[in-house]
Length: 346
Image 1 (spheres, helix red, strand yellow):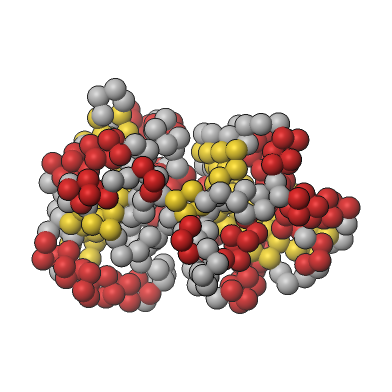
Image 2 (tube, rainbow, N blue to C red; image 1 turned 120 degrees about the horizontal axis):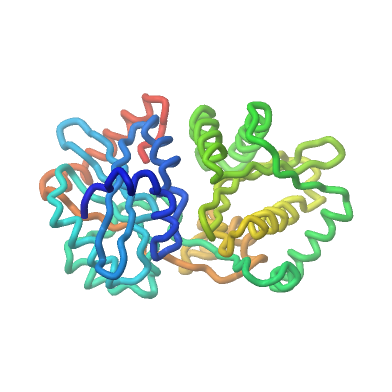
């Protein structure tokens, strides 16, 4: 584990896209620069695995008394347990200071031996700031083949929205369009109560990722009315359903199904091969009152198979500091963050 060189920093996003996992938008320079304005310091490192290198962006937050908290959002970008363990060992050898180093690599839960993870000093984190379980859509087949893979009701609702005159537009990230998007998210939060970050937070990263060529805003309309919207991110051959919102208006048109389909078509046309719908319950929680059951009910109509990652794993950097963080430090840090513009700790 070493700091990236100036040459590597110049081509950082290409290195991230070349990681074994295909890269993640939360590992890009644009995302790190954005988070630097919201309480985190990005630090970019390279791990040498012999046959290849892995680019990893760590976000560091400075906390009172206990020191630094390290968080690697959706990274480092490895997929095998062997590479994961090598990454952890190199991180341990680097002698990082502070409280903990939190890994969020998308190692599949089915491929992970929890005993081996504990054997290198990892502990299961008390939370997953990102999404631990998701649904992927393979965009490599033809459009007809992708459409045919959907549940019959999804295809029917897509046709219904089309016949009803619903349109989905990829629009510029202008101030007016982004305001529309935030209003849509506010309306959704009023119904679902999932907790919404400040308006300025969203406007900042939407602008940032759109300018970097890694984000696209979509608005769904019918006869002059804006019904819903979505912000998708993409890097290399991967794309993500980052944010979505809707008004409680003309829901009988089933516009959300057409929105997802048109976003998939747009991403496919821009070279994306794997679409991550994000944010569904873990397999063992489906149908048991998980607040994301409704999301799964919708997303499963495009693909019912849940992909579950191993989730965030903590490497304590100091025994007493980590214990203090888990007992009270994280709660205090979260309250302090709530008093600042970011409102959320992670």
